[in-house]
Image 1 (tube, rainbow, N blue to C red):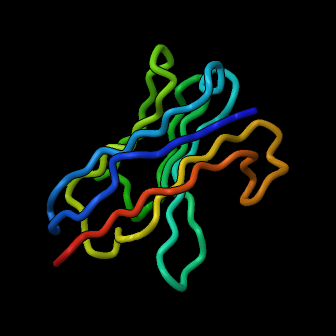
Image 2: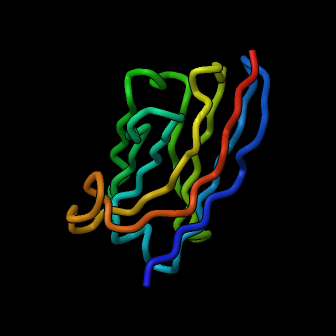
Length: 120
């Protein structure tokens, strides 16, 4: 069973930084594409960034140049470094793992989410 546990969310002022972490079950990072999603109140969940098992990365236009996704296979952890945060980045951030693509939004497993709030 795949387990994903996010941490690192919080309250930050605009222009500040946060680093989110997603601790995964052993072996997940070497077998699954990993993604970070976010969902703001009243809005659809959106893919923020993903990283493949060969370290190919992709970002949403809204975060390109400000966010960086990375992973540490030895620690079974995926990170999302968020710099120059804006109030519109406020959302619940979710870590997700994709293997078959059959799950919701194309990802098979999800964490519980961590709240990020950016004040202006």
